Length: 107
Image 1 (cartoon, rainbow, N blue to C red):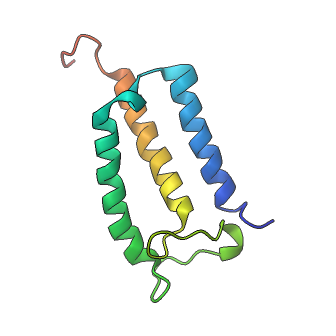
Image 2: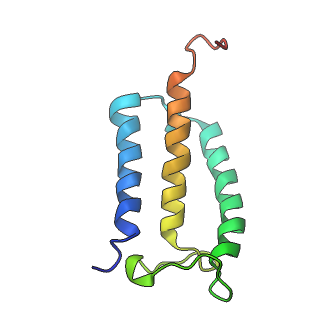
């Protein structure tokens, strides 16, 4: 089946992280401006590095196109890379927020 190799796990990771926040952790991270700024920074560097690694003209990382959605943006980056990256970074930040002391003091 086309797209299941990378696309399905990426979508499952996306849904799992959103569900983790909304149903379990409830940190409020998605409502924080700082979170969205940090995600913008992550994406900016991801575009630079991923663009270099996956450029079709001289790829270092080669994807089996039968296992992706076929959507590459920008500069030949498979969209699944962004979804996995978002899920990974967001999961770490959610767990970090959850263990943070509530009174603002360090442990």
